[in-house]
Length: 266
Length: 263
Ligand SMILES: Nc1ncnc2c1ncn2[C@@H]1O[C@H](COP(=O)(O)OP(=O)(O)O)[C@@H](O)[C@H]1O
Ligand SMILES: [Mg+2]
Image 1: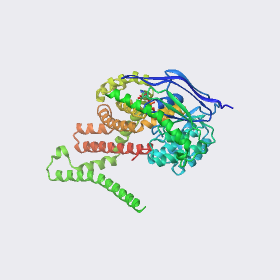
Image 2: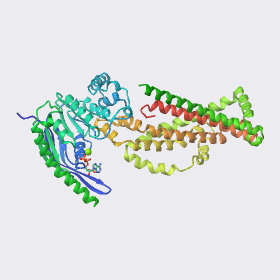
Image 3: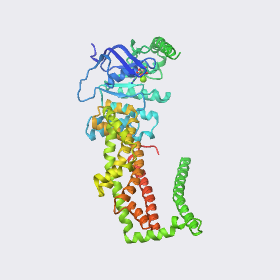
Image 4: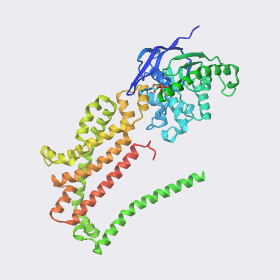
């Protein structure tokens, strides 16, 4: 029994032309992801993770190669993105932000209200429905941006280090919450992180990228049963073994990335 | 809990004090002027005296003359300003959203922008004569570039991630204007409107001095011609009041339209 493929990247290259010359961000990226699976992407910073996600989101075009996302239900958007940086619109209230995607899709107002009310409850911001982003903490804003992406009910959810800027406790709470919302939706997820812990806690597969120009170094299956408990997971021998394996692979790339940076400045 | 309330009370108190000060200081200045004038430390042939000006003000007010001039000036500024703001904002947003439009229009604006607006008056007189259109167009043309340039700057300043958010959720052209470019640029647009209001006040006086039979500018110019110093001062004070009220109005409008701004 094989699950149908949802995402496929074939020989994806991305070159940025800048005033200081060409930057090869991605070089021959190939992978595929089955429907309903949670993929974590790790790699040294600057290796092209965000670029890859933006290509999947259709915000950037491949310089060569192609990505394909199977879009089954035309009533739903193929993808929705949670951005790495603060991306909650400052001029809209929490309610308007969560409903923003639905509004752009011309959903009926009472449908929007229902969905928004549901997610306000889920992310625990019902009391802040009419607050503006400047009145929220960083963690609250990230919750709004996650809710905004879930609200349009996309087939694929693209998340770019959504909790990276948060403190450890908030991060753990939000990861827990994310799994709770995600489980049962059957959504395919691509989740970028620089934390191996986070990758192992959340995902079914971890894709490790090389130092820039980024390409796929290895994809590792995370055969840890769900539901996972963030507290006891770290003592699980399978978790420990996976952590070490990923760290060894990642370490080489982080060192290479540092060396490259040194070459450029030195 | 208590300390929060105390903070709030303190903040309220501070705000009230600010307001008192901002009313008291101009009144103090007027009192000083009156005293200096009575002590003949300043020449009343040029600087008159607040109490005389007040009397003239009262006479003009009772005769209805004053209201007529103020209302007509106000109408001209408002209409001219609106005629400038609507296309100015739309053009600025379009230039900010679409690179080719910006590339095509920006050099034209850069060439026209440095022309002192007053230099346009003779040309506008030729084109429009001395009717209402002349006054309105003077103000509109004087402000439109300022508003366009500030709107453009406002759009350019918007964090590109917000445009990505809109694109990612499938925004159409209208959505880019109404849900990102306009709200995102509003704070800078208001800076432009404030600057534009200053220009508008300058231009309305100039236009009314050379081509009008009414308005505050006209009133100031005729009082010079008949050497009615008090009436001239009434005109000047009205202009000051005018400027003050218009700034107040724009600030209120800003707070009402931009509730998401940290104050
Ligand atoms: N719009 C762009 N223009 C030029 N260079 C870019 C652009 N976006 C990303 N890059 C470059 O591409 C490389 C990969 O960037 P990115 O995908 O953001 O990496 P990561 O998310 O893994 O940290 C970096 O060297 C970055 O400087
Ligand atoms: Mg990144």
